[in-house]
Structure formats: C-alpha cells, structure tokens
Image (cartoon, rainbow over all chains, first blue to last red):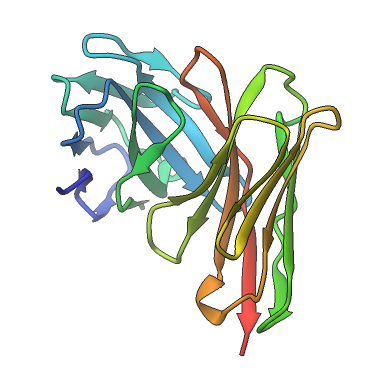
Length: 112
Length: 111
C-alpha cells in the first residue's frame, strides 16, 4: 500500500518555465490537497479538491493551477515559475471523516 | 492575526525530560485537533487526534485540549533522541475539510 505518492522529488526550474507536480493516492479518499511549506510559514494550503470533479482555492493559490484528473490523481501546475515559488510542496489526501491527513514525501522545487 | 499560533522554537531538552508543546487558536469553529510529527526532509505523519476537551493518551504522548481557552498541548514523557523532529498542530472545523496548521515547533532531544 503506497499511500500518497508524489513526483518529482526534486526539481530545479528557470524563471518562466512551467512544470507539473503529480500526486496519486491509493486509499480511495475523496479529498486531496496541495500545500507548500516554507521556513517560518508552516504548511499553507494552495488548492484542494473535496471530491472528484471539484477544486477550490486555498490560502495561496496565485501562480498555480490544479487538475483533479480522477479520484486517485491531483496535479499541481506552475505555468510560469517564479523564484517566490521555491518551496517544498506536499500533496495530501483525507479520509471522509476528515480527521486524518496522509501526506506524500514532498517535492523540493527550486526556481532560479 | 493567524488562526493558529505556535512557538517555532527551537526547543532543546535532555533525554528523559518531559516536553510540552503548545498551540493557541482563534477560530471557535475548530472541532478536531491533531498533532503531526515531521522529520527532516520527510512529510508530516499523524501522532495524535482528538475532538473533545480533555486529555488523550497514547504511550509516551498525551494530547490536551482546552476549548474554553482555545489552547492545545502535546506532552512527551521520557523524551528520546528519536523524538527530535518538528511538531505541527493542526485543526479542522466540522463539515469542512480544510485543515489549518501551526507553523511547527522544532524539538531537539539531547542524549
């Protein structure tokens, strides 16, 4: 049972380049999330998807887009990367009751 | 003002000490309270979860919630070097699956 799997683990981008972070969960959870984690800022919600077919903005959505491809997969896209998007990105999924969040291992993104 | 406030530390204690980690919150709608542990370069993992005021114990860990004061705590007894990590509190309001995290407290347990 893999849990939450996200790729890539490490990526370096040049300013203005685009890329997509992939996330998949095998726990049949309805809700999925994308967070970014920065020193002193904690985990901040970028976008979430309460169920297949729906997505909503979180606390810091600017510069990002998401796609809930199916129940398993939730991708995060940076259309034109900026140095301010250098961060660690975590995908997570939540069981229906909402009391347990399962996180992926993280994706370290550097924008130069 | 942030909805959830957590002292970032770092907190350094000797092995065997009792550790107290705390968070305060301002949103009265929060009903579910969680503590996550995050090792360096890893994703957070759930330690404790509770939804009522009072204490919940699991081995060396005790989670305490005081809804009247909007204050939650995590106590670690007989702390071990393997407890060295960042601890994040997290809160959820019922019927709405958006979780708000504290910024995390970095703990170091010195052998």
